[in-house]
Each structure stands twice: as structure tokens, then as C-alpha cells.
Image 1: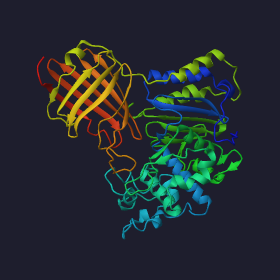
Image 2: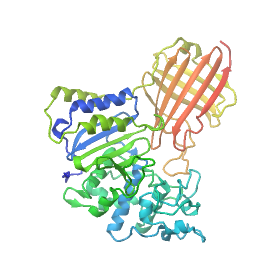
Image 3: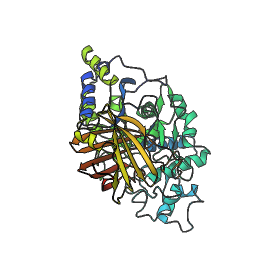
Image 4: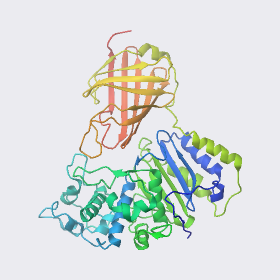
Length: 498
């Protein structure tokens, strides 16, 4: 096993991918594969022998921009637990219920009374599913008050409430948010962003199961610490014993993730690898035997039930192409790769930029029949240059408008105001940042794709079809706990005939 050596919070840059045993052509193929698949990737980072081999971002994302990590947050909580264990403030066999006398009922079920820190770390809770929903007022309380189904410490069942409980234990013992507890011990020494933060649960604790917001490099820094068994340069920041256990196979999870197993809030991978994983393809793949890390941020929620394009391309075009020795330099390929990375952009909505229908429908209000979206009227206004369309509509919130690019993406703020902000259950009345693109997929049918690019990520897809004076609309969304108003079908007629 090799070990990355590093003393500076910044990753040094490799002279070229070839110097680190990876061809520029392989990285180029990786990017082209994702482009052909229209994958909504936000950024990628390849690290070999402690050096940045390649790194790139798709606007509006950048190296400095904070990004929602979703369930990668669980791995961060695991490291906070490890620090507490190192300090003797917590033990793996501590029963978690003892930290919550205010949330446990008098008749606490024996399965819940027996559950330990270790059980929760390896997702072996006594619950068969997550105990809370977005309308619950106290996520941790639900863990102890939902009826369990089986003894703890036995069967893997992915349960984000387990991480909420673990993070809350860290915060109750330390008296501060878990990221703040980690800062002097682990985060500050590795150069983790000082303004990284975490969405809060309804009860006010850090939503450690899903809410960390930091940079891609921040995630890669913590992955590097784990790759090096708790070390950063010449400093042992967290014990090797804990990291070894956290990244090892602690429990079988073959029903949902092959036969690689699961550690302490960290996934096992083939080739003796392990990974941080978050919804929408937030990844940090670590391979100690190859001294190699692949990390990315993305939103593949709208790419079907699996959204495996990034993983598949990584295995085929990156991992499988690694060499243990430097490769011959290839200046032309490196120049092409650098040009490609400098011009990264999402592929816009497929279709034609122009249609005779645009002139016929532009500016016309359509009254809609009763529909699941609650939209009563809508219209499209195409600009003179043909590269933008303004979508206006009225729903229960009132009058709304969103600009979409045609043949490109347009930046705007999604009109809906009833979504969560920095705390689940609290609605600050903010509009989420978004990027939208539309095109004519048929002469009388406009399709649109809206990417929500805020601290919450999601995708809205929409089709508007015109037939004489009639309109038909279909909307579908993939997003956790928002965009619920934008699902279903609607029909209607022009308020005034042509």
C-alpha cells in the first residue's frame, strides 16, 4: 500500500495526468462519455499520489462554490464520532438511548434500548426504513418512538435517522454543531472551508444525514485523510484504528450494493476500495492500494432510477486505465484536455431552436382545466432573437415567471416560495437558483428541463404541446421535498382564439 504525503492544505498539481499514471486521452473520454449521456455533473476531481491529476467544473459551479453533499454528510458524522471515541468521550458499545432521556418513551422498545453506537454506524438499526419525514417536528425523536421491526446489530438497512442520532450525540456531548467540534481537531488542519455549514433539522441540530454544504475539494480532503489512515502529512488527526474500522467491511449489504459490504457510514467498494456516497452522485471513491481518489459533485436524480453514468464512466475510463508507473507525455492530448475542461458546459435540451408554432403561441394566455399542479393559466413569450422564452403562469401562489434558454441554459430563480431554507420545516420565502433550457422536440411540442442548482438540488421536466387553440402539459420532477406542485398533466384552451 502506498501513502499520500501532504503538509499543505492545498493539493499540489501534477505536471500532467501521464505523470500520475493516467493518460490525458482517458480523462478526455471520461468527459465525452458524460457529455454524450447528457449527465448533469457539476464538478470532478482526480487525485493520484496526493496530486491533482485533473479537475473541472460546469457553470454555475466552481472550485470555490459550496455544494450540497447529501449523504456524503454521513461519512463526515462518522469521523466526528471517531474523534469522540479517540478522546474517550464516546464508546462503540454505548447504548444510544441513554443520550436521549428527553426523547425516549417510558415503554421504550427493547430493540431500541439495546441499539448501540456501533449498530447505528454500520446501519444495523432495528428499523426497516427511515423513521422521519419532512413534516416531522423532531427527527431524532422519531427514531425512538417508531415501532422497530428486528433486533439491532443484525441486518443492514439504510437509515438516515441513525446518522441524525449519531450527530446529535456528538453535539450533545460537545455542546456545539458537529462541524464546529471537528474544526480544530480535523477540519482546520486540512484546509477545510471555514464557512462550510450544515442544514439543520426541525429540532435545531445539524442534519448530519444529508445537510453538509462544502466544496468538492473539502470532500476530497477528508477522503485523503481516510485514504491515509487518519493522517494528513505528518499529523495523525484521527486514529488509524478508527479509520481502519470505519473503512472496513463491518456488515453485509449485498441485497442493495453487490457483495462489498459497509463500514461505519462509509461504503465498501471492489478492489479494496471504499467510498463516501450521496444522493444525486456526490462521490468520493478511495483506493488505498492505488493511492487514488476520484471525487465528484452532480445531480443525477433526473437520470432515471439509478443514474450510474458517472460511476460507469469512472470505472471504465479512469480506474481501469490507471498505471502504476508514469506514462509517456502526450502534449497534444493534454492541450485538448485542458481546452475541454476550460469549456465544460451542460448539453442543453435536445430539439430544434425554432418552430413556426412559437410565433403562433407567443404571448397567448391559455386557461387550464383543473389539474394536479393547481395552475389556472399559462403562456409563453419568445424573445426576438429566439434564444430565450419566458414562461408565465398562475397558481395558488399567484403570478409567476421563469426564463428558459433555447439551445442554451438560462440562469434564473425558480418562482416557488414555499420551500425550506437553512432549517427543515422553516420556510424563509426564498427562490431557489436554477438553470433552464427548452427546445422544440416536435413542431408543436416544446420540452423544457429545469435544474435547481441551490443548496437543494432537483430536476423539473416539462412538455407543452399545442393543438389548434388547445394546450396539453405534462410535468414531472425528481427532487427531495420540493417541486411537489409540479407533477401531473393538464389541458386547456387559449383565452382568445387565433
